[in-house]
Length: 540
Image (cartoon, rainbow, N blue to C red; front, side, top):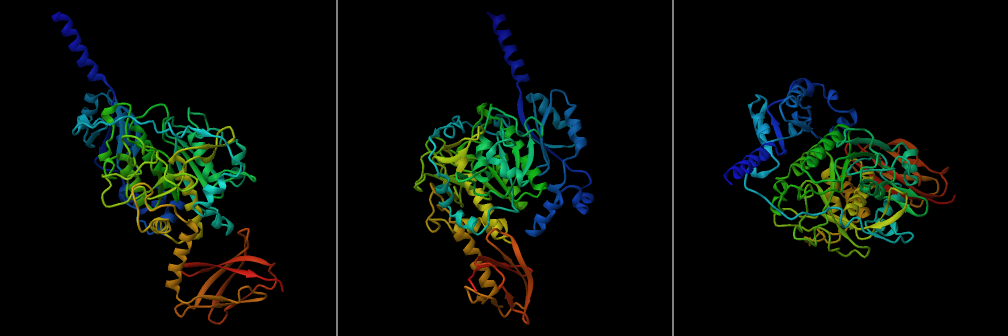
């Protein structure tokens, strides 16, 4: 009996010694920081540099890549597997036994070690397991023309009528799989316009982003923004450009997925992406020792939430689905939607009513509102990997529906900062003056958001008028007293620029006599401000 106990005890010790753990290894420094910052094009694309300059975002040490020598050294350490890296955190995600990971502290370039299993760091945390796709997989019978409701609900259809369809805006989608996006008819228009910019699979470390990975979730998410089926389906940003990044392994739940997400966000930043959409949320894991608790959903605890906040600092507008835990014990918005720096999107049904599965604001989110706003996520229209229009439930779809709408809004307000866009969206929402933990600020009206922004521009420009309107031949322009020189562009209903000229105090009239009758947009641009007005060309 004694011998049996000894054998079992030894087995317990050995089993624990060799159990695989996940941890983040934070490094002490980076090489050649000054040289890299002096030559930023060596570490970021020109598009990324242009976006940062446009929004006055400083380039700093966080933009410098991790020391590859340090990574190579970690890979040679006994029992250690390197899984992911982050330049923003100057950290490496590794897997190995507790002893082997702790042994890394002997390396001179290792500053701190943070185990995903909080038993090895701080007090234990536990929570009940949630299946993030359980609700989203419920399919409802197709009803023709359903996309009209989810588009009109946020009033993005009026932006589309004005030819603001997301053109010139780049969106990165982090998800679990994008099968058949490269061949499906619903994305033919996207491919023909060269707006499908490919991407990367951070799990399998391959650029084959369209392979089937046990999940069609990303394909459906992309469809709400980018798909186009004549007379049947139009996404909220059909002319935006898209990078697709696989960061979620649908077969398991492990904190490595948070690290993959941060890696993808860093890649998106370096590519000059404007918006990130993620219909993922992280709360609990297969190994309960790794799990977060609702109290951790404060925007400052989860690795992915801290990464999302850095992405926002870098000038990216991050749009995150709030989660599907509203009717569970968990209940609150998950990570990274808990970050105060991202827009977290809850769900309503086709009538604009709260749906019970939509995650709610929680006690941990002190001093800020979650969710921020809502869109249709109850029986939302999406397109499956089989090119079929179906209906699914989940904030996984309310998030991208609104993200695409924001892309169309941002096209209309090209000089607005990410923070300003977020503010306009919130201010336009149905219960902005009385937010709650179910709908946040409510359902946004994106056409109103555009008008709010333009009204602010109008105050800055002063008295600014065009007349007569409708016009037959000569359109007169009244400049405010503070402006004596600006550029104007006129666009037809197809979004084509048909006139560009400079307006001065001595030349304040444009000839529209040769224009065909119809609606036109005129854009006025100074060095710091742009303004868009409509005018109607009548029959001569």
